[in-house]
Length: 122
Ligand code: AMP
Ligand code: ZN
Image (cartoon, rainbow, N blue to C red; front, top):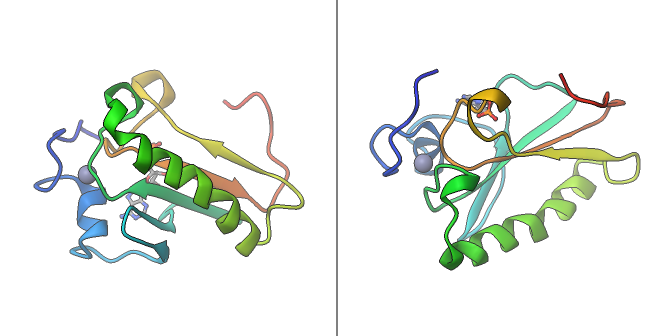
């Protein structure tokens, strides 16, 4: 997939999901973040957690975005519990750049669980 513009709004797929301009299965949202089901799940539970603010990836994180990021990670355990994967275990992944296969350039944390996950990843 081609790299998305970094400015947000316009052509960013996940900004459109936040704005509900394209449909998704949102499981949680608040003033700072949205969590929704991955369209191509790689495990029985596969959620994507994203800040409402358009941040294109980890390399673009700014100190003033600490609230967005900490809030997202503080909410993650609650979603893991609600999805029933907290006890058995789960994996959180942030792909960054080409070698990691990042395909959407709006920062997102994958939350995967519900099956035994191999390590190291491919
Ligand atoms: P990454 O490869 O880490 O950039 O992850 C992007 C993820 O977004 C992939 O797991 C895709 O399956 C997922 N994805 C792409 N389009 C959609 C969509 N419209 N709704 C939900 N998830 C999507
Ligand atoms: Zn965006």
